[in-house]
Image 1 (cartoon, rainbow, N blue to C red):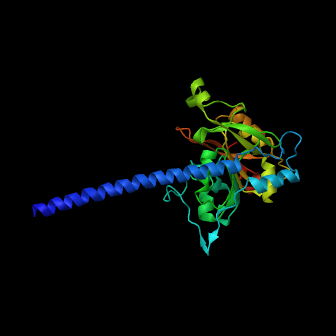
Image 2: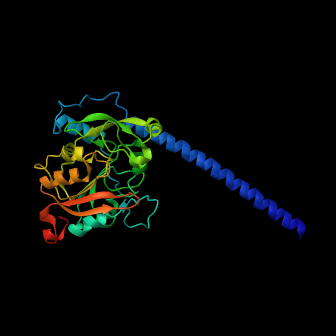
Image 3: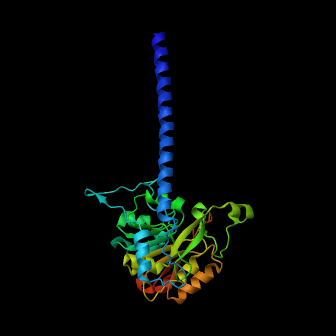
Length: 317
C-alpha cells in the first residue's frame, strides 16, 4: 500500500512537471509568434520608406490620390462572417456590457441608438478598454471606424474582432495629411509636437525623455469619411490627450453631419471652455459633462439641436 502511494505521488509529481514544461513552451511559442506578428504589422503600416509624398500643406484633404492612399493602405476591414457565422469578439471581459466611463450612456439618452448607426472613435486604444463605441456595435449593430495611432495598442485591437474599420493612423491637427512623431504612453499617448496640458503623472523630464516615439501617418477627419464614402456620423468619440480642439478645427462642418460628440477636454491648452465655445459656435449644445475622480473621464457631450429628444432647455446651458 505504501509502495502504491509512493508511485502515485511520483506520477503526480511527474505530471505536474510535464504540465509546467508545456506551459513554459506554450508561453514562449506565443511570445515569439506575437513578436513576429507585431513586426509584420509594424512594417506593413508604419514603414514610410516608400511613402508616396502625399503629405504637407499643399495636399488637399479631398485629394483623390490621398483618399486612395488612405483607403488602400490605412484601413483594415471589419471582421466578417465565416460560413454564415459571425466571428466572436475576443474580449478580455465578455460580461462587461458597457466599458465606457459613462459617455455611451449619455449618448444613448439623446439619440435613438437601437436602430443602428455609424461611429468614429479616436483614440480607440485596444478596441475594448474604456471603449465608448463597443456597446453600440456589440448590442445594436452599429458600424464605424476605430482610429489608433500607437502600434502597441493597434495590434491588440486587431485581435478583438471588432466589426468596424480599423486604422493604424491618427487624426491630423492640421487641414492636411502629415507624418508626426507620436509618444507611446499606453492610454496617454499623443502627438509629440502639439502643445497640450501635460499630465502631472508624466510631467517630469525623465518620464518625457524615456517615452518611446514612433512616426505615425495622420489624415484629416474629412479624408477618412471620403475614403469610406460616409457623410453622416451618429457619434464621434474624440480622446487624443490634448489635441482635440485642433482636430475639431480641421472639420468642414458644412460638408458632413456629425450628430453627437464626446470630447475629452482635460489636456486641451484652451481648457474645457475653449472646446465648448468652439462647438457652440458651430451650433452644438452641451447635453452633459462626464467626469470622474480617477480622471478616467473628462468629457463634454455635444449634440445638434435637431437630434435632441427633449426640449433644449432641459440640457446644460
